[in-house]
Image 1 (tube, rainbow, N blue to C red):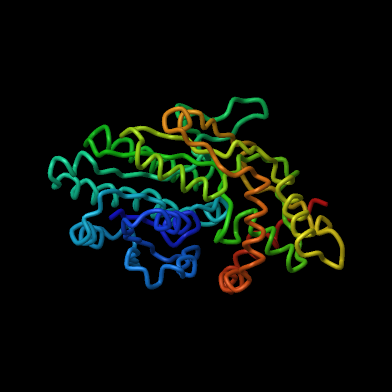
Image 2: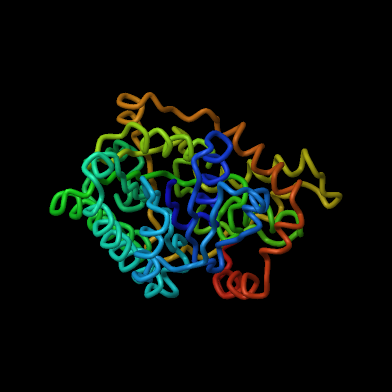
Length: 356
C-alpha cells in the first residue's frame, strides 16, 4: 500500500485515479477536505476496496502514527498543500500551517515509522514530496530555464512556504537518512481543477458571460503541464528515482497568460458557440497582484535523461481534453461553485481596478 496525502484535491485525485487504473496496489488516501478537496473527484472509487479514504489533517501526529501502524505503507506521496498564490496573499497563516508545519509533522511521523521497519523494508521505503517551480523565483525573458540546482528565491507566501517544506525534506534526508524524493513541477491543468486557478476560472466565467480577469498586461509566462503527464512522471520518480534527489517536471510549453485565455476562448467558441459572439470580448485586464513573478520555465532534461520520462500531451491536445471535460461535467462544476467560492472570487477580483 502507498499513502497519498491530499488525494482528494486536483493533482492528488488525478494521481489516485491514475494509480489504480494501472495497479492493484491499494491507496490510503488522507485528505482534510478543505475547500479544494472534493470527494466527487473520486466518485468512481466509491466501492473500490483498493481505495481507503481517511478524512484527516497532516498536522495530526496521533492520527498519522495510527495510520502508519495500521496500514504499513511502503511509500508516501505527499500532495497535501495550500497552493493558491492569491489566497496566500490574503491569508498566509494557513499556508505556513499546512505546508510547513504539516510537512514537518508528516516527516517526523514517517521517520518514526521508517526507523522501526526491518532492514529490507527500510531500504525500499520512499517519501516523495511534490513541490512547485515557484520556489525558484522569477525569470527574465531570456534567462535559462530552472534546473534542479537553481537557487531558491520564492516571492510569495505560497512559494516561501513550499520552499520551506522542500528544505525540511532535504534536511530529513541528510540528517536522519530518510529516503526522500522531491519533484518540482510547472503549472498543472486538466480535469477536476478547482476554478480559482487560471484555466478553469476562464472556462467558468466564459460559459456564463462573465468578465475574464487577466492580471496586468497578461504577458506573465508559465510552463504548462497536463495533470496526467504529471501523474506519470511521479510514478516514474517513485519507482526509479534516486533517494535524496530532486527532479523537475515540466511540459515544455511556455505560454503567456493572455495566450492561454485566448486559446480557451477559441475552444469554447468552437465547441459551444455563444450567440453574443467570440468570448474574447470578455477579456478584462485588471490590476496585477502583488509580487507577480514574470516568468517560470522548467528544464526537465534530468528526469528525461535518468528516467526516460517526457510529457505525452502537447498543450493543444491537453487543453482540448481539459475544456471538453468541463463541458461534459456541469454537475461537478456547479457543486464546487458554492457560496464560499463566489465570495472568494468577489473578494479577490471585484475590487481590482480595471485597466482597459
